[in-house]
Image (cartoon, rainbow, N blue to C red; front, side):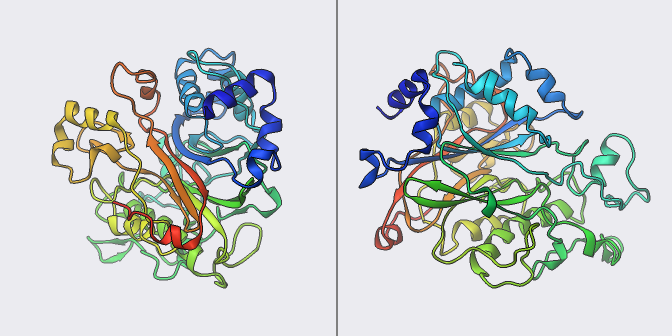
Length: 414
């Protein structure tokens, strides 16, 4: 009924009205569940504006599949990871107008009247030698490895938030430029061959923590303001024995723990000059491709576990799919050695990695989960041929307000 109702609204051109409405009779006493999702869509290119040029005209098969997944699941609040950034939002315009607002593969169009995007560190030149090769920048990967976050051009692998409810843009906080060195007990990489710091004393204070950015996006939902805490930490691979990416990934996750704990931290200053963490009474959802599986693959697993088990994060059973189980069984390899539940996997890789649980939607205490899932259908089921458009799967939760007692007694995460 929920999907049918929204599809009917979209067909009548009333999606914008519905998304901004906060006083309809059905919402006065019991707001409808808020569907929150994260989806790494792999819409990036090696050259600036490359994705927009490819998508122009609405015929790109990969983008049509991604849009179909979004239309099928119809999240109210959605984070897209690996969505190339451009300052004018031209790519976001094309994707919304020519893909989301056009029915794909039998699905109903969907309209998002509110969105947020901002600069990221990927591809942004640092002016420093970060990969230790003795020179600054260069063509291709050499440019990317010396950028503040790995990328072949500024904005590659960016982020986009889409919302059916108003975003308080004046209250958005971004942490793109926060120095890594300011994080308490920062995991500074060291070269084990020499015993010296990988980043010397001239570089370390200038190095940014976030490989893309960390955003606090307040959204005015019918049930009150929800802070959408979104990020995309660096993969904990593609480095050497100094483990600079693994340590950075762990500290990018740790930043969210400080944001929840340190209301008065004078070091925790955003790009707008405001310092301190999230107020204790605020409701939030942490979302993103966090690039850290709690049990398998590379990375410092304690960093994601500590975030999942934070006292302000609602304990809950992770979303699952049947398709993830089928994929792990059929692909074998590294999947056979994994200890985690393959039903909770959210990504499909080959080689030594296998499928991993990397994408998360973590709600705060004060919210109640009424539904969840990983969009990964079994072969032959509707949508099964869409998921190959990305190596990640959409993860979603349906959320309602809950009293503290209900939230505290919720099922533990596992």
